[in-house]
Length: 209
Image 1 (cartoon, rainbow, N blue to C red):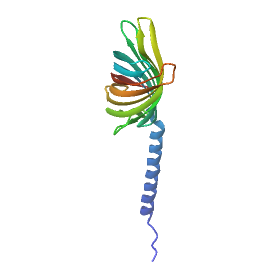
Image 2: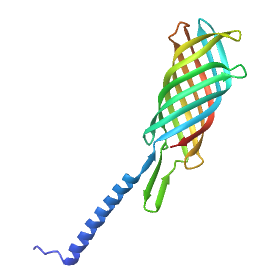
Image 3: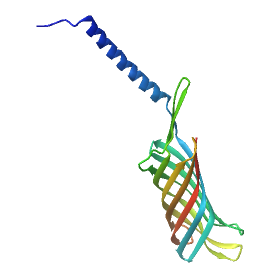
Image 4: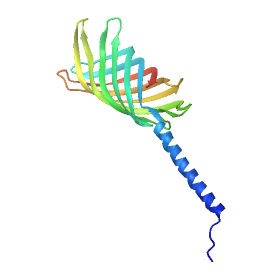
């Protein structure tokens, strides 16, 4: 036999529906107010060495190489980056290795991105403490494969393909410390036919924007 619902039961049902709608609205508001820090600038320095063979055979080792990349996140654990590396030997200022290229990075078991969520009077920041990543990049490198005195040099232009692995530790809301190791393989397309590899070990930092 059908029994009509009591007014109290109807009221409880309306309250549940109202709470559900409120929760949906709150989640939507938080998602809309989430502001991911979707770009990051890396600055590193350290050792880079190379060994090449072909028309000329040679090697170099520069302990004060400069490495900069600008990273753009497409997901909380994936990104693209644009990279510039230069290894200049001092005090002669010989640019043994100059590279420019772009690549892809994947953060393993960690979120790479920083995000802020805000409500009136409240700001909540989600900051990953440790981050681990693996990546690859490809670009063009110019390598001094042979020096003939202090002025004349044999320079080879190469297609450069590299792999790298990194560890980052967040020390502030935007700033992190970083260690990176990697290697690359070069194949010449210039009038000086060469092939070879480089290895590198960098330390530095990164800053969220």
